[in-house]
Amino acid sequence: MAIRTLDEKFAHGLGDIYDAEHQFLQALQEQLQQATDPTVQQLLTTHIAQTQQQIQNLQQVFSLLGRQAQRQPCDAAKGLVTEGKKLMKECQDNPALLHLAIGSADAKVEHYEIATYRDLIAGAQMMNQPQVLQLLQQNLQQEEQTAALIEQNTPMLLQKAASQEQYGSGASQGSTPTL
Image (tube, rainbow, N blue to C red; front, side, top):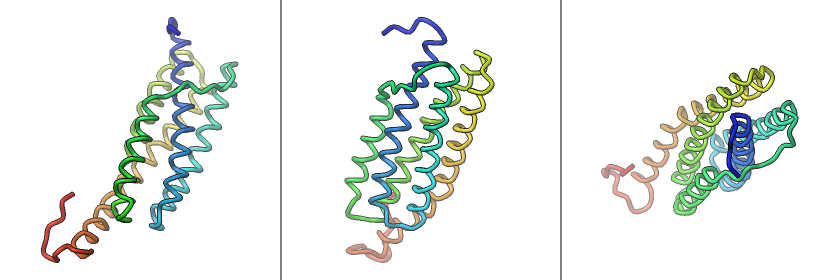
């Protein structure tokens, strides 16, 4: 279907992120089942709760606009989820690398979401929709906080993976890990 108006473009973007959030929620739940690191488990648990709230916020946005909440298939989300699952599968035999893979996959997702919410916020401002704007800004703020939290924990995950590689099975103690 051709998009001919700003309203249609906004609705498409809204449906796109609505679908993306659902795809990401399912991926987070699968990641939580595989995570054994307590820090990663806590991050995922918090992230799942935030994603559920973001979905509710999007449902409110649809309602405020007089629309039925409808998912627009998001190929970008599908690709990010597929890429993350593939990396996790390749790292499944090494828990430290698996946790690092989860963090990497989630960081990519957060930056996609940030870009999408910024675009939608610009549209809501143009359409003079203050309640919609507020809900989208709440989602953006959570996405930015989550991205920062992932980035803060990345050095710890890297260190755990490097330590396991240096002192783990088959590696010599003096070797330098390849990251």
